[in-house]
Length: 361
Ligand SMILES: *Cc1c(COP(=O)(O)O)cnc(C)c1O
Image (cartoon, rainbow, N blue to C red; front, side):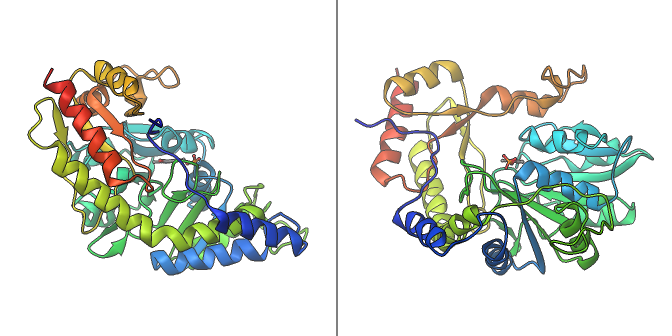
């Protein structure tokens, strides 16, 4: 029996043909028309006014902060439970990541704890809609940040295909950021996107990603900028992946439902409530007892799984002595189960049967 990886990218002959056709047409590989086309498709899907595709989801967050004028000594509030790129994107430009705990119901930043962490140095809040789940406090995040002159940046890297009240995640904040790294729902190997409805921010973003130039090829620098550009070779892959997005979004929801149905009434495993009308789960995430034994048991049965991120504040990179009990608890119990969108129903049922077998031993 073949090993079921926790997550795999999914390409087929469409991407191969597109790359081949692109190269045959004599493209320069670097970013140009195909990147603009990918941006147009991304705007259409998310409904945003403006989109900028960049090198990866870490620099897209950094660009968002720079565009908002954030820099050395400013404080950026981030959740303790997220991918490490969220705080690191702020630290890269000399800002300070301030961690706050999450809400156990949806694993997103706890709004009350965010409010308590605001100081006179707070310039931005980075709200991570982790695993495509919204927080019902989303509109309150927006209004609180507005009232207090704080930028709201949504790290929606795990939320492509997920909505709140019918509006795509990443569109509530001043800027929304996405990633196309290998484990994401669609991938270009590496890649990131920024979306916004704010033209002024978009104009800054375009310059920041291209050395601060007023337009491509011109050597006149209006702002300080760097090279965070994409490549057209990746964009041709991205355009093909976008065509598959709608199917994958639905399939991830079906996979979520199937796991839910087959994992209920097992003591030792807790599911996180998910609103599948709005959320397309990036990974299937569960809270489990005896996690390391379960991981080895699954592995012996050809099933891959992956532990949740650790509480970032306590990692050697930060080493803060504070405590965030909700993050600490869910990081200790959290497990990601096989989640690739090409998985067959039989494979998911097999995984669930093995989990049941483990807890009934
Ligand atoms: C994947 C991810 C990122 C980083 O994206 P890269 O493209 O890998 O740099 C940032 N934030 C979250 C929440 C992510 O899941």
